[in-house]
Amino acid sequence: MKTLIRGGTIVTATDRYVGDVFIDGETIHSVGTQLDVEADRVVDATDKLVIPGGIDVHTHLDMPFGGTYSVDDFQTGTIAAAFGGTTTIVDFAIQERGGTLRQAFDTWRQKADGKAVIDYGFHMILSEFQESLIEEMGPLAEEGVTSFKLFMAYPGVFYMDDAGIFRAMQRSKEIGATICMHAENGPVIDVLIEQALRAGHREPKYHALTRPPRAEAEATHRALCLAEMAEVPVYIVHLSAAEALAEVTRARNRGLEAFAETCPQYLFLSYDNYEEPGFEGAKYVMSPPLRAKEKQHELWRGLKFNDLQSISTDHCPFCFNEGKQLGRDDFSKIPNGAPGIETRMSLTYDGGVTAGRISVNRWVELTSTSPAKIFGLFPRKGTIAPGSDADVVVFDPNAEQVLRAKDLHMAVDYNPYEGRRVKGVAEVVLSRGEVIIEGGQFCGKPGRGQFLPRLTRTSS
Ligand code: URP
Ligand code: ZN
Ligand code: ZN
Image 1 (cartoon, rainbow, N blue to C red):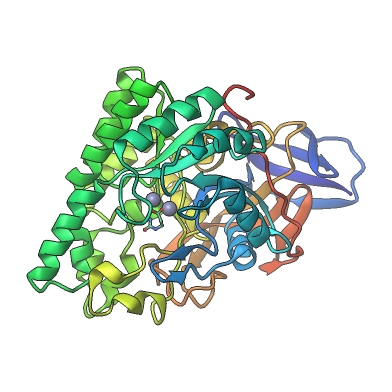
Image 2: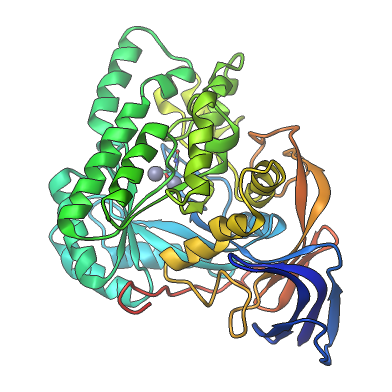
């Protein structure tokens, strides 16, 4: 199949010009102005942006958490992603305590197999440090799982102490892998939670009040220092606090290979959402929590000046009327996480580019190119260039959409941005040359998405 996307404004992390993209099979054949080619299909992109498909490097599909599972599986979650203009995800496989990394990898491959509609890779969550990990990490990286997530939070579940973290970091350096860090001081947070519960505080807002910005900043600082000693690159996931960003900025200024992402929820929602009446605040229970509105401009500054290199979603949806109710009488039992896989591109185009906070090139860089580079997917993914996979989105910068759970495709019963009007909508979405979204319809097949082995830092 040969497809010509004609007359759109092609935007990459570096360029912006009116031109054509010619796709032959699964890859981009050529890019130019007024290409003289024979195509089986022509997509008119006049007055539209033509961008590399979005890359969301932080999702949790079909993930066990707090006695339940995130409600999007690899089918519903990747269809929703595609509707929003995302054509690649990197999800998190989880090592069970006492289990091997191989078992976790196989389990997550099975979860995705036959379901995913876009391409996907995996990070591996190391749930506890055990000596055998040292042997197990190398073969996994060779198979393309080239990043490992560690937790400084959630004692008794995912938490790893500094010695374990340091060993895993040293091993990552040896095998060319990257460490993804959930940076919150879990033991201190647990003390605050216990004290809050003893004082009779049960409402959702205490989730945020027991996870102060300094608990995130302290852990971020420690993670950066440990990574510096281990001489390994570190990527701070879901950074929410300006105080934590200041630590990343300082580390980068010192010359460390420190990277960080933030997520739309930290840019567009705030602590005020926890003050919504009744149990509504549970919709926003995630870790780290939402922060003060007055601090959001610091995250935008970080995005603009490259102290933050990526915008991902941390998509981890639990239904309000089911999963979230587990914490009806105790905020600490509310499953952590919120939906976002479908709304990332539109929210950040609207609130970033249209609002004048970042350029359109920077938007592409933050939502596609830079995550592809950090996680060993570039140049196969993350740009529009000859030889790259034909993951291309025709994006209408003028179309408007009101975000409502009932109109979106995620399997969750609420939307944190309910009623918000955004300008900028993914209109046609191609994944490896195949149109999978068009005319507001999904037209791909479950299972068409492929596992993406990612490059290590030494092979990229
Ligand atoms: O609240 C969150 N972030 N849930 C997902 C798990 C994680 O820590 O990323
Ligand atoms: Zn996390
Ligand atoms: Zn997460």
